[in-house]
Image (cartoon, rainbow, N blue to C red):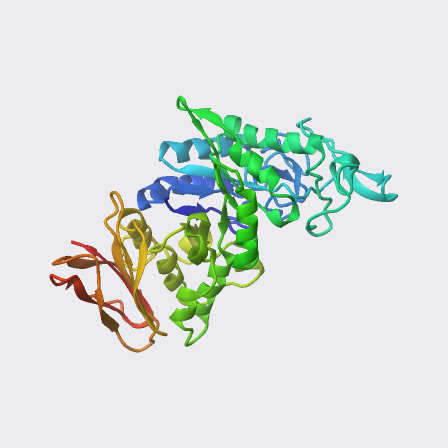
Length: 444
Protein backbone atom coordinates (compact mmCIF):
# COMPACT_ATOMS: atom_id res chain seq x y z
CA UNK A 1 0.00 0.00 0.00
CA UNK A 2 2.93 2.35 0.57
CA UNK A 3 3.86 4.85 3.29
CA UNK A 4 2.24 8.25 3.78
CA UNK A 5 3.96 11.38 5.08
CA UNK A 6 1.90 13.95 6.96
CA UNK A 7 3.71 17.01 5.67
CA UNK A 8 2.79 19.50 8.38
CA UNK A 9 2.39 20.15 12.09
CA UNK A 10 0.76 22.94 14.04
CA UNK A 11 2.28 26.34 13.24
CA UNK A 12 4.61 24.69 10.71
CA UNK A 13 4.97 27.63 8.31
CA UNK A 14 7.13 29.52 10.74
CA UNK A 15 10.31 28.27 9.07
CA UNK A 16 13.22 30.51 10.02
CA UNK A 17 10.66 33.10 11.05
CA UNK A 18 9.17 33.25 7.53
CA UNK A 19 5.49 32.63 6.90
CA UNK A 20 3.94 31.57 3.57
CA UNK A 21 6.93 29.38 2.63
CA UNK A 22 5.72 25.91 3.53
CA UNK A 23 4.93 24.64 0.00
CA UNK A 24 8.49 25.48 -1.05
CA UNK A 25 9.87 23.86 2.08
CA UNK A 26 8.05 20.59 1.37
CA UNK A 27 9.06 20.75 -2.27
CA UNK A 28 12.75 20.83 -1.38
CA UNK A 29 12.40 17.56 0.54
CA UNK A 30 10.43 15.61 -2.10
CA UNK A 31 13.43 14.01 -3.85
CA UNK A 32 14.73 12.63 -0.57
CA UNK A 33 11.31 11.44 0.60
CA UNK A 34 10.83 9.56 -2.67
CA UNK A 35 14.29 8.01 -2.38
CA UNK A 36 13.55 6.94 1.21
CA UNK A 37 10.48 5.02 0.03
CA UNK A 38 7.53 7.27 0.83
CA UNK A 39 4.67 6.96 -1.63
CA UNK A 40 2.21 9.72 -0.71
CA UNK A 41 2.11 13.20 0.80
CA UNK A 42 -0.81 14.41 2.93
CA UNK A 43 -0.94 18.19 2.65
CA UNK A 44 -2.65 20.59 5.08
CA UNK A 45 -5.84 22.36 3.92
CA UNK A 46 -4.94 24.29 0.78
CA UNK A 47 -7.77 26.86 0.63
CA UNK A 48 -7.83 30.43 1.93
CA UNK A 49 -8.87 30.37 5.57
CA UNK A 50 -10.44 32.99 7.78
CA UNK A 51 -7.64 33.58 10.26
CA UNK A 52 -4.34 34.33 8.59
CA UNK A 53 -3.25 36.19 11.72
CA UNK A 54 -2.44 32.64 12.64
CA UNK A 55 -1.69 30.15 12.75
CA UNK A 56 -4.88 29.22 10.94
CA UNK A 57 -3.64 25.98 9.37
CA UNK A 58 -6.68 26.04 7.08
CA UNK A 59 -9.19 24.32 9.35
CA UNK A 60 -11.42 27.41 9.29
CA UNK A 61 -12.18 27.52 5.53
CA UNK A 62 -13.44 30.68 3.92
CA UNK A 63 -12.88 30.42 0.12
CA UNK A 64 -12.45 26.83 -1.08
CA UNK A 65 -11.27 28.02 -4.51
CA UNK A 66 -8.63 30.48 -3.35
CA UNK A 67 -5.40 28.52 -3.18
CA UNK A 68 -3.27 31.63 -2.87
CA UNK A 69 -4.43 33.81 -5.75
CA UNK A 70 -6.84 36.42 -4.35
CA UNK A 71 -6.16 39.32 -2.01
CA UNK A 72 -8.55 38.52 0.83
CA UNK A 73 -8.35 37.69 4.53
CA UNK A 74 -5.16 39.70 4.85
CA UNK A 75 -2.97 38.28 2.09
CA UNK A 76 -2.75 36.81 -1.38
CA UNK A 77 -0.93 33.59 -0.32
CA UNK A 78 -2.57 31.11 1.97
CA UNK A 79 -0.77 30.36 5.22
CA UNK A 80 1.38 27.89 3.24
CA UNK A 81 2.10 29.79 0.02
CA UNK A 82 0.73 30.64 -3.42
CA UNK A 83 -1.26 28.63 -5.95
CA UNK A 84 1.80 28.55 -8.21
CA UNK A 85 3.99 27.15 -5.44
CA UNK A 86 1.37 24.50 -4.63
CA UNK A 87 1.24 23.50 -8.30
CA UNK A 88 5.02 23.17 -8.39
CA UNK A 89 4.90 20.96 -5.30
CA UNK A 90 2.24 18.65 -6.78
CA UNK A 91 4.06 18.43 -10.10
CA UNK A 92 7.33 17.57 -8.36
CA UNK A 93 5.65 14.93 -6.19
CA UNK A 94 4.12 13.26 -9.26
CA UNK A 95 7.40 13.40 -11.13
CA UNK A 96 9.02 11.54 -8.22
CA UNK A 97 6.25 8.93 -8.04
CA UNK A 98 4.38 10.24 -4.98
CA UNK A 99 0.63 10.75 -4.82
CA UNK A 100 -0.76 13.85 -3.09
CA UNK A 101 -3.66 13.86 -0.60
CA UNK A 102 -5.75 16.99 0.06
CA UNK A 103 -7.14 17.74 3.51
CA UNK A 104 -10.90 18.28 3.01
CA UNK A 105 -12.64 20.40 5.67
CA UNK A 106 -16.28 19.88 4.71
CA UNK A 107 -18.09 20.28 8.02
CA UNK A 108 -17.85 23.99 8.81
CA UNK A 109 -16.86 27.42 7.51
CA UNK A 110 -15.51 30.60 9.07
CA UNK A 111 -14.83 34.23 8.28
CA UNK A 112 -18.21 35.20 6.78
CA UNK A 113 -18.55 38.64 5.24
CA UNK A 114 -21.76 39.55 7.06
CA UNK A 115 -24.32 38.36 9.56
CA UNK A 116 -27.81 37.18 8.57
CA UNK A 117 -30.93 36.29 10.47
CA UNK A 118 -31.84 32.64 10.07
CA UNK A 119 -35.64 32.81 9.75
CA UNK A 120 -36.01 29.30 11.15
CA UNK A 121 -34.43 30.23 14.48
CA UNK A 122 -34.73 34.00 14.40
CA UNK A 123 -31.06 34.24 15.42
CA UNK A 124 -28.36 36.24 13.66
CA UNK A 125 -25.23 34.36 12.56
CA UNK A 126 -22.18 34.93 10.39
CA UNK A 127 -23.34 32.96 7.33
CA UNK A 128 -23.06 35.26 4.31
CA UNK A 129 -19.99 34.31 2.22
CA UNK A 130 -19.04 36.21 -0.94
CA UNK A 131 -15.57 34.86 -1.78
CA UNK A 132 -13.45 36.63 -4.37
CA UNK A 133 -13.13 33.43 -6.38
CA UNK A 134 -16.87 33.87 -7.00
CA UNK A 135 -17.29 30.10 -6.59
CA UNK A 136 -19.50 28.45 -3.97
CA UNK A 137 -21.02 31.58 -2.40
CA UNK A 138 -23.09 30.77 0.68
CA UNK A 139 -25.91 32.28 2.69
CA UNK A 140 -27.96 31.09 5.66
CA UNK A 141 -29.66 28.39 3.56
CA UNK A 142 -26.28 26.64 3.20
CA UNK A 143 -25.91 26.10 6.95
CA UNK A 144 -27.66 24.40 9.87
CA UNK A 145 -30.50 24.62 10.55
CA UNK A 146 -31.84 24.86 7.01
CA UNK A 147 -35.07 24.03 5.27
CA UNK A 148 -33.52 20.66 4.41
CA UNK A 149 -32.13 19.71 7.82
CA UNK A 150 -33.22 20.62 11.32
CA UNK A 151 -30.50 18.75 13.22
CA UNK A 152 -26.72 18.60 13.02
CA UNK A 153 -24.45 15.59 13.61
CA UNK A 154 -21.77 17.49 15.57
CA UNK A 155 -20.52 21.06 15.64
CA UNK A 156 -16.94 22.26 15.50
CA UNK A 157 -16.40 25.16 17.84
CA UNK A 158 -18.66 28.10 17.10
CA UNK A 159 -18.34 27.91 13.31
CA UNK A 160 -21.50 27.54 11.18
CA UNK A 161 -21.91 24.00 9.89
CA UNK A 162 -22.70 23.31 6.25
CA UNK A 163 -26.04 21.61 5.61
CA UNK A 164 -25.05 18.74 3.34
CA UNK A 165 -28.67 17.80 2.66
CA UNK A 166 -29.17 21.08 0.88
CA UNK A 167 -28.86 20.00 -2.79
CA UNK A 168 -26.86 23.14 -3.61
CA UNK A 169 -24.28 22.46 -0.88
CA UNK A 170 -24.06 18.77 -1.72
CA UNK A 171 -23.49 19.50 -5.40
CA UNK A 172 -20.90 22.19 -4.66
CA UNK A 173 -18.88 19.84 -2.45
CA UNK A 174 -18.82 17.23 -5.22
CA UNK A 175 -17.73 19.93 -7.69
CA UNK A 176 -14.98 20.95 -5.29
CA UNK A 177 -13.66 17.39 -5.07
CA UNK A 178 -13.68 17.09 -8.86
CA UNK A 179 -11.85 20.41 -9.24
CA UNK A 180 -9.16 19.41 -6.75
CA UNK A 181 -8.53 16.19 -8.66
CA UNK A 182 -8.91 17.25 -12.28
CA UNK A 183 -7.59 20.81 -12.24
CA UNK A 184 -5.36 21.12 -9.17
CA UNK A 185 -3.88 17.63 -9.44
CA UNK A 186 -4.61 15.87 -6.15
CA UNK A 187 -4.93 12.08 -6.03
CA UNK A 188 -7.09 11.65 -2.95
CA UNK A 189 -8.51 13.14 0.21
CA UNK A 190 -8.16 13.15 3.97
CA UNK A 191 -11.61 13.96 5.33
CA UNK A 192 -11.52 16.17 8.41
CA UNK A 193 -13.98 15.72 11.32
CA UNK A 194 -16.34 13.29 9.60
CA UNK A 195 -18.40 12.98 12.78
CA UNK A 196 -19.93 16.31 11.83
CA UNK A 197 -21.87 15.20 8.76
CA UNK A 198 -23.42 12.20 7.07
CA UNK A 199 -21.21 9.56 5.50
CA UNK A 200 -23.10 9.73 2.21
CA UNK A 201 -21.14 12.83 1.14
CA UNK A 202 -17.88 10.92 1.42
CA UNK A 203 -19.38 7.87 -0.27
CA UNK A 204 -20.29 10.02 -3.27
CA UNK A 205 -16.83 11.60 -3.49
CA UNK A 206 -15.17 8.19 -3.24
CA UNK A 207 -17.33 6.88 -6.11
CA UNK A 208 -16.32 9.76 -8.38
CA UNK A 209 -14.36 8.60 -11.45
CA UNK A 210 -11.82 10.63 -13.36
CA UNK A 211 -9.68 10.01 -16.42
CA UNK A 212 -5.92 9.94 -15.99
CA UNK A 213 -3.32 8.55 -18.40
CA UNK A 214 -6.02 7.01 -20.55
CA UNK A 215 -7.77 5.10 -17.77
CA UNK A 216 -10.48 5.75 -15.17
CA UNK A 217 -9.44 6.17 -11.55
CA UNK A 218 -11.13 6.88 -8.23
CA UNK A 219 -9.66 9.02 -5.43
CA UNK A 220 -8.02 7.54 -2.37
CA UNK A 221 -9.76 8.52 0.87
CA UNK A 222 -9.06 8.37 4.62
CA UNK A 223 -11.32 9.78 7.32
CA UNK A 224 -10.67 11.33 10.70
CA UNK A 225 -13.20 9.58 12.94
CA UNK A 226 -11.78 10.05 16.42
CA UNK A 227 -13.42 7.34 18.56
CA UNK A 228 -13.09 3.76 19.77
CA UNK A 229 -12.66 0.87 17.36
CA UNK A 230 -16.29 -0.30 17.36
CA UNK A 231 -17.77 3.14 16.65
CA UNK A 232 -15.13 3.89 14.02
CA UNK A 233 -15.82 0.64 12.21
CA UNK A 234 -19.55 1.28 12.32
CA UNK A 235 -18.91 4.56 10.53
CA UNK A 236 -16.45 3.00 8.05
CA UNK A 237 -18.86 0.22 7.14
CA UNK A 238 -21.72 2.70 6.73
CA UNK A 239 -19.61 4.89 4.46
CA UNK A 240 -18.48 1.86 2.46
CA UNK A 241 -21.88 0.22 2.09
CA UNK A 242 -22.34 -0.40 -1.64
CA UNK A 243 -19.13 1.59 -2.22
CA UNK A 244 -16.74 0.19 -4.81
CA UNK A 245 -13.95 2.50 -3.60
CA UNK A 246 -13.84 2.11 0.21
CA UNK A 247 -12.63 4.88 2.48
CA UNK A 248 -10.07 4.13 5.22
CA UNK A 249 -9.95 5.53 8.75
CA UNK A 250 -7.11 6.70 10.97
CA UNK A 251 -6.54 4.18 13.75
CA UNK A 252 -6.87 6.34 16.86
CA UNK A 253 -7.45 3.30 19.13
CA UNK A 254 -4.15 1.75 18.03
CA UNK A 255 -2.39 5.04 18.56
CA UNK A 256 -3.52 5.06 22.20
CA UNK A 257 -2.10 1.56 22.64
CA UNK A 258 1.17 2.72 21.09
CA UNK A 259 1.28 5.63 23.52
CA UNK A 260 0.89 3.09 26.34
CA UNK A 261 3.83 1.11 24.94
CA UNK A 262 6.08 4.16 24.71
CA UNK A 263 5.09 6.16 27.78
CA UNK A 264 3.93 3.61 30.40
CA UNK A 265 6.60 1.60 32.21
CA UNK A 266 5.72 -2.09 32.26
CA UNK A 267 3.02 -1.82 29.58
CA UNK A 268 2.08 -5.36 28.50
CA UNK A 269 2.70 -6.26 24.89
CA UNK A 270 -0.34 -8.53 25.16
CA UNK A 271 -2.44 -5.40 25.52
CA UNK A 272 -0.80 -3.90 22.44
CA UNK A 273 -1.27 -6.94 20.22
CA UNK A 274 -4.70 -8.00 21.47
CA UNK A 275 -6.14 -4.57 22.27
CA UNK A 276 -9.05 -3.19 20.27
CA UNK A 277 -7.99 -1.35 17.13
CA UNK A 278 -8.93 -0.95 13.50
CA UNK A 279 -5.72 -2.81 12.64
CA UNK A 280 -6.81 -5.84 14.62
CA UNK A 281 -10.45 -5.89 13.49
CA UNK A 282 -10.26 -4.74 9.88
CA UNK A 283 -6.67 -4.14 8.71
CA UNK A 284 -7.69 -3.33 5.14
CA UNK A 285 -9.46 -0.20 6.43
CA UNK A 286 -6.77 1.27 8.66
CA UNK A 287 -4.27 4.09 8.35
CA UNK A 288 -1.92 3.57 11.25
CA UNK A 289 -0.01 6.48 12.77
CA UNK A 290 2.07 7.45 15.79
CA UNK A 291 1.57 11.20 15.98
CA UNK A 292 -0.35 13.98 14.22
CA UNK A 293 -0.83 17.74 14.44
CA UNK A 294 -3.68 17.50 16.96
CA UNK A 295 -2.12 14.95 19.29
CA UNK A 296 1.45 16.24 19.23
CA UNK A 297 0.92 19.95 19.62
CA UNK A 298 -2.65 20.22 20.86
CA UNK A 299 -3.33 17.12 22.95
CA UNK A 300 -1.60 13.89 23.98
CA UNK A 301 1.92 13.59 22.59
CA UNK A 302 4.06 10.49 22.93
CA UNK A 303 7.04 11.60 24.98
CA UNK A 304 9.31 8.54 25.09
CA UNK A 305 10.90 5.92 22.82
CA UNK A 306 8.71 6.75 19.83
CA UNK A 307 10.69 4.51 17.47
CA UNK A 308 9.09 1.52 19.18
CA UNK A 309 5.73 2.73 17.88
CA UNK A 310 7.07 3.41 14.39
CA UNK A 311 8.60 -0.06 14.24
CA UNK A 312 5.17 -1.51 14.97
CA UNK A 313 3.19 0.36 12.32
CA UNK A 314 5.88 0.00 9.63
CA UNK A 315 6.10 -3.77 9.97
CA UNK A 316 2.40 -4.58 10.37
CA UNK A 317 -0.58 -4.40 8.03
CA UNK A 318 -2.40 -1.17 7.29
CA UNK A 319 -1.30 2.03 5.57
CA UNK A 320 1.28 3.68 7.85
CA UNK A 321 1.57 7.46 8.15
CA UNK A 322 4.72 9.21 9.41
CA UNK A 323 4.55 12.62 11.11
CA UNK A 324 6.77 15.34 9.58
CA UNK A 325 7.85 16.75 12.92
CA UNK A 326 9.05 13.33 14.13
CA UNK A 327 10.93 12.71 10.91
CA UNK A 328 12.59 16.10 10.45
CA UNK A 329 12.37 18.24 13.59
CA UNK A 330 13.08 15.42 16.06
CA UNK A 331 15.49 13.66 13.69
CA UNK A 332 13.90 10.23 13.96
CA UNK A 333 14.61 9.61 10.28
CA UNK A 334 18.22 8.76 11.25
CA UNK A 335 19.28 8.76 7.62
CA UNK A 336 21.85 6.21 6.45
CA UNK A 337 21.51 4.12 9.62
CA UNK A 338 19.52 0.97 10.45
CA UNK A 339 18.14 2.68 13.59
CA UNK A 340 15.40 5.05 12.49
CA UNK A 341 12.28 5.70 10.43
CA UNK A 342 14.15 5.61 7.12
CA UNK A 343 15.26 2.04 7.70
CA UNK A 344 11.72 1.07 8.74
CA UNK A 345 10.20 2.66 5.64
CA UNK A 346 12.64 0.60 3.59
CA UNK A 347 11.57 -2.51 5.49
CA UNK A 348 7.92 -1.75 4.83
CA UNK A 349 8.41 -1.31 1.11
CA UNK A 350 10.85 -4.18 0.54
CA UNK A 351 9.72 -6.90 2.93
CA UNK A 352 6.42 -6.26 4.76
CA UNK A 353 4.06 -8.29 2.61
CA UNK A 354 1.58 -11.04 3.45
CA UNK A 355 -0.51 -11.98 6.42
CA UNK A 356 0.62 -11.59 10.02
CA UNK A 357 1.25 -14.55 12.33
CA UNK A 358 2.04 -14.12 16.01
CA UNK A 359 4.86 -16.55 16.75
CA UNK A 360 5.40 -15.63 20.40
CA UNK A 361 3.71 -13.23 22.82
CA UNK A 362 4.32 -12.45 26.48
CA UNK A 363 4.08 -9.29 28.56
CA UNK A 364 7.51 -8.11 27.43
CA UNK A 365 8.33 -10.03 24.21
CA UNK A 366 6.51 -10.20 20.90
CA UNK A 367 7.67 -12.06 17.80
CA UNK A 368 5.69 -11.66 14.59
CA UNK A 369 5.99 -13.05 11.08
CA UNK A 370 4.87 -11.47 7.80
CA UNK A 371 4.50 -14.39 5.41
CA UNK A 372 5.38 -12.54 2.22
CA UNK A 373 3.36 -11.58 -0.83
CA UNK A 374 4.35 -10.74 -4.40
CA UNK A 375 7.75 -9.04 -4.51
CA UNK A 376 7.79 -8.58 -0.72
CA UNK A 377 9.28 -11.77 0.74
CA UNK A 378 8.18 -11.23 4.36
CA UNK A 379 10.00 -10.61 7.63
CA UNK A 380 10.41 -11.50 11.30
CA UNK A 381 9.74 -8.69 13.78
CA UNK A 382 10.85 -8.86 17.42
CA UNK A 383 9.73 -6.29 20.00
CA UNK A 384 11.40 -6.44 23.41
CA UNK A 385 9.86 -4.39 26.21
CA UNK A 386 12.31 -5.54 28.88
CA UNK A 387 14.44 -2.58 29.81
CA UNK A 388 17.68 -4.31 30.78
CA UNK A 389 18.44 -7.36 28.64
CA UNK A 390 18.28 -8.81 25.17
CA UNK A 391 15.44 -11.28 24.74
CA UNK A 392 14.57 -13.96 22.21
CA UNK A 393 12.66 -17.20 21.82
CA UNK A 394 12.55 -20.29 19.67
CA UNK A 395 9.65 -20.00 17.23
CA UNK A 396 8.23 -21.94 14.30
CA UNK A 397 8.45 -19.91 11.09
CA UNK A 398 7.23 -20.63 7.57
CA UNK A 399 10.80 -20.76 6.23
CA UNK A 400 12.91 -23.93 6.32
CA UNK A 401 16.72 -23.98 6.16
CA UNK A 402 16.74 -20.22 5.74
CA UNK A 403 19.24 -17.56 6.75
CA UNK A 404 18.11 -14.21 8.15
CA UNK A 405 19.91 -10.92 8.53
CA UNK A 406 18.89 -7.92 10.67
CA UNK A 407 17.74 -5.06 8.42
CA UNK A 408 16.50 -2.57 11.04
CA UNK A 409 16.91 -2.30 14.79
CA UNK A 410 16.92 0.16 17.66
CA UNK A 411 17.26 0.12 21.43
CA UNK A 412 17.03 2.68 24.17
CA UNK A 413 20.19 1.19 25.72
CA UNK A 414 22.11 -0.92 23.17
CA UNK A 415 22.44 -0.18 19.43
CA UNK A 416 24.74 -3.08 18.68
CA UNK A 417 23.84 -5.12 15.61
CA UNK A 418 21.67 -8.20 16.23
CA UNK A 419 23.26 -11.50 15.24
CA UNK A 420 22.19 -13.16 12.01
CA UNK A 421 19.90 -16.14 12.55
CA UNK A 422 18.83 -19.26 10.67
CA UNK A 423 16.02 -21.80 10.71
CA UNK A 424 16.23 -25.58 10.69
CA UNK A 425 14.65 -28.07 8.31
CA UNK A 426 11.36 -27.78 10.20
CA UNK A 427 11.36 -23.94 10.14
CA UNK A 428 12.36 -23.52 13.75
CA UNK A 429 14.65 -20.63 14.70
CA UNK A 430 15.57 -18.24 17.48
CA UNK A 431 15.22 -14.47 17.10
CA UNK A 432 16.33 -11.72 19.47
CA UNK A 433 15.81 -8.00 20.07
CA UNK A 434 17.84 -5.58 22.23
CA UNK A 435 16.54 -4.21 25.56
CA UNK A 436 13.63 -1.78 25.23
CA UNK A 437 13.99 -2.13 21.50
CA UNK A 438 13.14 -3.99 18.32
CA UNK A 439 14.80 -5.94 15.54
CA UNK A 440 13.54 -6.76 12.05
CA UNK A 441 14.99 -9.77 10.22
CA UNK A 442 14.70 -10.54 6.51
CA UNK A 443 15.86 -13.42 4.33
CA UNK A 444 19.44 -13.10 3.11
